[in-house]
Length: 431
Ligand code: HAM
Image (cartoon, rainbow, N blue to C red; front, side, top):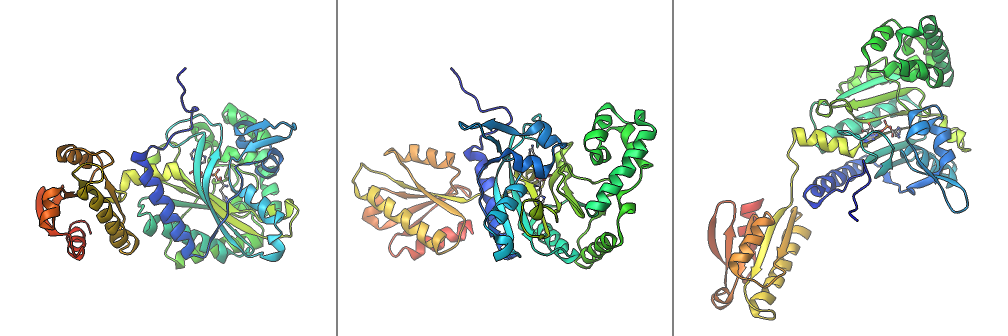
């Protein structure tokens, strides 16, 4: 029997994992600069939690959830997203009363049974943010400001676009849905068959259909922005002015609606051309009614999530991700011999001085097999080592190590005692 990973769920092999680790490290550092605190919630939740918040009529709930019955016949679901579980946790732990203004972040796997393709997986990963307790447009601007600078300065990503829209409050949204339904009812044949179905279940989704016939029809359809009440209009205009003042470029996109029902007011999406059809690397918006809907106080909230798989594609396209520098310490001798013992000690000195205390992104590895110099140099090369430190009987008797620079293809002798000289020689080559 040959086993394979489940379709749409992928292994992240060591050759790629450094990129993921780097992204997660940068994201954590960035989010902590802005005062976000990490939250970890279970991967499995009650099915009703998602059905109620994301919405029965959405693609996620109606077609894409991994739901199953446990031994007690309870319906559970692998989380398709992070917002609903975090709001559940916020209310369950009474944070709405104890700590209503809190900024949270999470990184982890999500599950949606979509048709797999480039940038669309069945197990995928998100870096997400949920910010509770302040419903002003200024908060929206701060959330987008953090996201913009994390993408640009943190990850070094270029070429992305922020699309921005407002769906208005619950009342505005309902009014607009009615208007749109009436407009469609005049001549439903202008829409594709999928959209005719959507118009019944989740009419807003018709707006982001990619089919040419629907796009043409929608050019003349009413705009959500024309249905905003004066408070929502003021909020949206305030946000746009704040983003301009912060020098954050965005594109007002009247057909941006999002595929989850809990949104009200501001919605946004980040797209990148490297992705093709699935071009959203992230998305978010306000959900001012969700805490109350889950039994909490009336607390406003906003958040976003970035898809890590899609970020990886966009970054591979535009940027070289830094890999750790590799130093390989090769002891030549038999087990227990002085060169082997000393190689282990020197490797530890390097980890301490260059990594733990020197803050460099390095790895120091030693050969695990006792083998010849030639074989160890081959292993060092395979491991991508920039530098090999060689330690055999000759080096022990002379007190000088051999430092082989694998990039420049040169070799020097360096005193092993004191080790300062060795550390300086390595730093000079890899810093
Ligand atoms: P979403 O738009 O469903 O929003 O997902 C956010 C991001 O997750 C997408 O833009 C995309 O990058 C990534 N993503 C979604 N589905 C897949 C998939 N099948 N394969 C790969 N990547 C995917 C949410 O999930 C909201 N919870 C975001 C949010 C947080 N809103 C407020 N707070």
